[in-house]
Length: 526
Length: 112
Image 1 (cartoon, chains in turn red, cyan):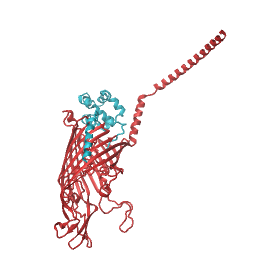
Image 2 (tube, rainbow over the protein chains, first blue to last red):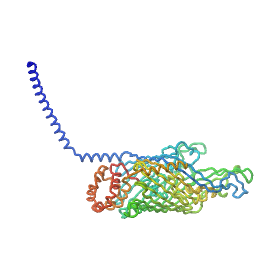
Image 3 (tube, rainbow over the protein chains, first blue to last red):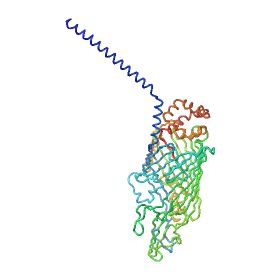
Image 4 (cartoon, rainbow over the protein chains, first blue to last red):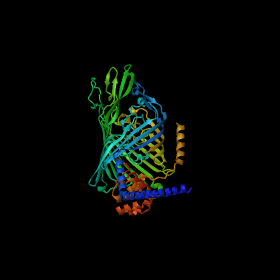
């Protein structure tokens, strides 16, 4: 037994001796590594690294396009009343009063419920301190297929490409660059592109947009291409927030497309003048007279040249010396004259100063706008009598001359006021708005997102109430709104020629006398 | 159409009663900046907000904003009174949100 145990004990003692040596060596090596690591760590400047990461983040945030999403699903309930008037009969009798071309029509009501999806993809990038790019692509569509292409000739109009529902085509809503600089104490910016020109000052409240787009929403709210040059004169005038902005826009380009065909059958060179409607241009001056964060006073003045009016081809088909049938068909746009306009608007963001939280969190605004026409009085309609050729439409009283249905200079005006206050629970907002337009009031608000037609173009009275509530912070919100328009005249949301006649097309045709739009929507933004 | 409207209005009211949101607001922060700070800082909101990264603003506004108050009272002594008053305490969350929203690394770029 001893012979067995003794060698084992000797072997164990020797083995443990060797193991202790190994362990000591490993511990020493680890200590050396630790010391190296400590030395390396102490040489790292954490603050410098933080700064570097911040710089990288700031750089990356600016030099790539940053996208944001604004998606809304909505249901609009539309209700219209159409007043009595004189409708086209399609036949004439020269011996009858008014040539028998029109006959009385009764009043009627029409209504519809529309589901829509609206997606706006916003873009932004700032590759350099003095250069910015901004853009937005949009799709605004009704649910499913529709017949708009067959029923509405102005459905795809450029002025409201992403502001009136149509098909699933992605359209360009905004794309512009901004170049900034300083001239002494005057900070300036220059910009070209498709403008941020819908849901501007004041109208951003009903649209539930935190920041207004560029123009005064009372009289300009439509998509267009152009340029702007802004000069901040706050430092040299000492007036808080004061700036001037020169705005230029083109609402219509006179050009053929590529491969247009000439009358003689040959092909025209590409993009030449088409000889119909000239370029329609607008130049304006936007002035922020004061802005201290609470009180904001803005004004604009503008002039539009070669405003567009729609012409008609009237064809009479005689069946006897005095009677026959007739047809009317659109013949495109014409220059019907120029128009000037102006506005003055005040917004109070927070009523009083610390009276109570409710007033601090309330917004009130009031605005006045006007417009004046300068008609060219060109004849825009044609009158053809089958078998007798082209007739003098003007002499027959069907020339369609003038602006807004009048051959004289006419002045229109509008007032717009509203208040937005906190709702029943925290984060909720409720708004009330009212506007009134006169007989010849004409705004450029074709891009207002009201399916029943622009309420701010109303020649008469328009009322709106809306309630907005957050569901998931500001990322998911819901809104319920009701707009009611009570028209005193026809032609409120039409073009600038005979279709804008306050008495109806041809001075007699029936028109919508009231319209309402109830909208329930849910909106995702990030 | 009336049934759809009825259903949607009912859903809206229910959602309204269920939703509770206590949140700061960058737009309000901008308003307070313009109203109370711009004159004495001498710079517009965009220039002010890009002085720091989002993480830096968060650190400065930590707690009751002591670090922010210390830094900007030193930079703009005329603002010290505002920073130490009740209004700043009341509006600080909104001003913080505004600074973070438009911080140098926010990727937010100014519009026209």
